[in-house]
Length: 469
Image 1: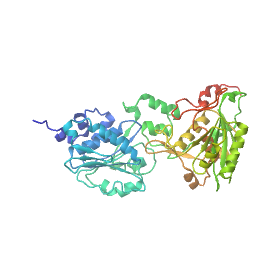
Image 2: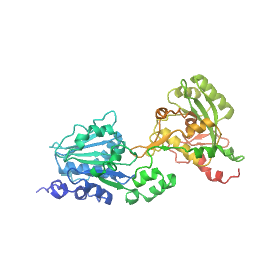
Image 3: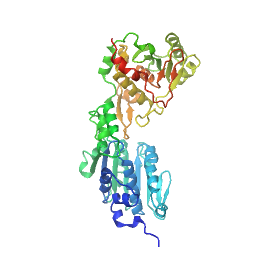
Image 4: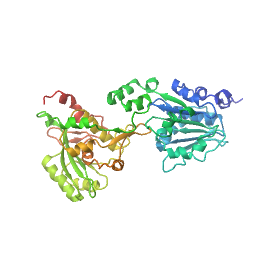
């Protein structure tokens, strides 16, 4: 006689935490259990603000599978701002959990890239990416048993929630909002503030999760400070004090421009050029040189075509002999890059939009390079006292995305605030595109993109701090 499926046990249909234990062989953490049990009752509305790595993706996958396994005609719409969060994270967890089921139970599900279908029934788990240009991501879903899952909820546009308001407010509908608390406005923020009485509100700190290594919190505290908004969001699961933050302070810049270089300190350092090309309009073409812990503006100009700008870069490079030249290859920069490659210099193209070396921390390469520039300024460098460079460095703001990544304010966003493009600072940021080493008697070596070796200025920081000025 075939053993009865665990899916039919009434006590499991009433408890997602018990389902996780009995059907999947999991032992939820106290935080995960608290979340799962909060979803047990029809009409439950649960909002979770969380630090990084507390197991919320596994919790969401358990909740979705519990709902479909114990309710053959149940519907589970899932959404998140980036599509990869659904396919690469939630769907991967769903596949893993389904794989833990006995063969006869596992055979009840058919999984594709955007849905898990209950065979022989109407129930399904379905993925819909929440994009502002597609505000109907959560619209049109109706069922007697329905569970809405909204991950990285801080990054979901209010327009999407507005379109789905009717479905989300259905009396029996369960709703789960989870994410890093990165924004001080919007539907997710309101669930913990203006509309807090309508939600079961949970906060998951990394400090209370056995899934998060203790060194993670220590690393964030060491890099940003325990009193920083980054620590609040990524470790404590608390909302930041401010929604946008200035990336580089005026104090850091003024201190750098007031320093002098210790005699002979820079002799062993590689000289690197950063070139940010522009053409027509008000933007400037800028060339900035950096050698270790010192930097200066080489040239700033407007209105040069690619040929004349290339000639200018080549002429200055002939005099300075930089070990590497990093060029913003976006738009007009592609022409400058192609022409500079015909010279004898080591020239590397960089796109600010490309994938960063640390994709888990930064949205794009530009955010990563500006963050490296910020760290460099904190290391105590010397900057040429250039008022335009000073103004450019303190212009951009940054914020955290729904997934906790660092997003630098775009040039278009800056223009809306009445600020010009930070061309000189962009050129300086380009000098951090890859670590560059200079070896006596040998050409410069540009380190591979996946190199874990620190930048030259990090290697020399201690020596710099103890040098006599």
